[in-house]
Amino acid sequence: MDRFNVVISRFNFKKAVAIYLLILILAGVFSAGFLAYMFRDKLTFLYEYHRISEKVEDNKNGLENMKPELADLADASPDMVDILILNGQNQILYSAKHSDLSQKGTVDLTPDTDRNPLFFTDRQNPEVHFRLMKGDKLTLSASMLGIENKVKQEYEDRYFYESGFAAQKVYLLSYIADRTDGQKVYIISDVQPVAGGEFYIKAVAAIAMLFFMLYWVLLALWVYARALGAKLNASMWGIVTLFTNLAGLFVFLLYRQGGRTCYKCGSLQNKSNVYCTFCGTKLGSVCNKCNTAAGEKDRYCKNCGSVLDEEKDQDE
Ligand SMILES: [Zn+2]
Ligand SMILES: [Zn+2]
Image (cartoon, rainbow, N blue to C red; front, side, top):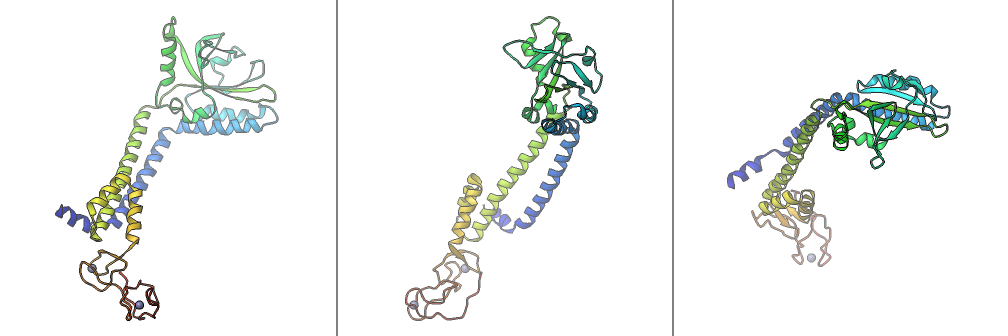
């Protein structure tokens, strides 16, 4: 324990915190950049999807003038199968990629089963299934980010007993509807997971966890070192902070606030102490008349009201 105390009392916390913050910022920037790069297609799509759906909601002239933007969105991600504009009768008015899905001229989706209205099929394309992904769920969806193949799994779990299900295709479908004229935009994408995507997310989460644990331990060590310097029960304060983190820190700071630090030996002394109980250094002044200990900033004695000496004692 003694050797540990020697090391910890010499430990330069300011430097450690500076290095910690520097590495934290570098790791944060690097991780964010790395993830943004790995998931760039998905993120671009999510951003564009939200932007376009907001625009459709404000749009008063139908969806006709959205075509250039929808074409850009369709080109933005290799996962994109097609983006269709349909009228109220489900006739295709526009296809951004002229995929097979658009060849029949209409897309008329009905739920695969009544019980689970998540998967839809078009009777003209019975081998293609659409998994509906709507609005806010898109942003949080792991399938959309491509970190797992949940949608295909979900489909297989539900329909594996159907004949020839291996030949079935599952696409993600998001739609934006224009309420004024019943037109809608179907955004159809393939379920393509980013290779290693799940691992990257977990790795970054592990790094973040490591930094958090390091911070946690560093804080407890700092309180331990400060308590050691103030000649308090360092182990107790260190353990309290290790278990309660910031709560422990605040209690420690408050406790320290309640006393005064001996400028010579650094021990925490009762505010009313005139002499340090560890090294005997004179800490404060006493009233010449009644010998009551006076506070640092007191100008009059709190006991008898006489004027205190103007000789100010040194601080810390
Ligand atoms: Zn002292
Ligand atoms: Zn007095």
